[in-house]
Length: 418
Image (tube, rainbow, N blue to C red; front, side, top):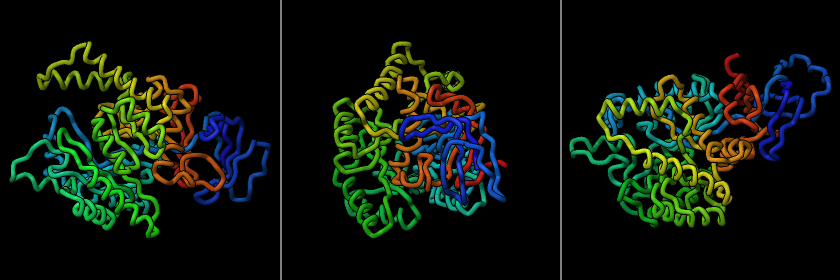
């Protein structure tokens, strides 16, 4: 039994005062006003009367087995080094730390989208489910499906075998279908595709073949497995939408006309992976790296333009009614921050762009659960749902940054760290 000072109902956008949450096993039995209830025999009472309780957070775009230390270089340098020097085994062990840090920051579910070696994400997911290591519930994609070369810029022939450690390369419709079958055989819960890398772009036919194959498997009784599409340019986004994907990841080059199309159809989520403009520590870090590598500094006008474009993209997506789910795409090492803290900081970009705190919370809870096809069990606090919840000081529906003050985490009915 949990006595909560405040409970956030993300579905109705209400904050309920003085509530008792009854948990049995991994499920919420009931939520009702606190009225001096008799404590059932053998029950544990958790006093959160001075805190705000809300659903566990969901990050729909993570790379828990991947880290980029910008001090070591840019472009392909860091990924080549990680693949060739660490291998999948060490990366899975690195992922153990990332997973724990995500859970401690309040993320009880994540969708991990590749850059995990050959099925390292499956190993980490299974280890968490078995109780071997602490971490959030993981929905994993295995290796992303891409065109030849993956997301590498260019590699000599001798080094091109590294691509297969990170991506399943396709060329044509039949290879696209085969890649989906391979992913499901490897243990994928979802599919990640790389629609564009510079001028390289998947065809609509290849995208549609992937989506059709996923849906064919789903009709066989395996449940919904969403297709996530890395798409940056507006043309790539349009082709991904035509192909029937479930989410557009990043969408940095999306035009207002495409946002309107997504808002009208409401079939495809936009996962906005933006930077918190107030993250001064990271800004300082990147400035130091820029000097170290003698990289040109963007002009004040360029930086202002980039910031304005990101802000406008976020504002328009929400104001037009595009389905938005939160994703951090956090993998750059941030000195002084855990992986969970770095991921959480990305959510604040939404409110910095003028999005109401409640809508930002929905993107990281119930909307994210809808994208994952798990809204019946995750994403909000309701009787019968999984008991994933966190408690923070203050009121995140007023000031979203109070999410940095997590004081309690429960995943599947089990308190974390107690």
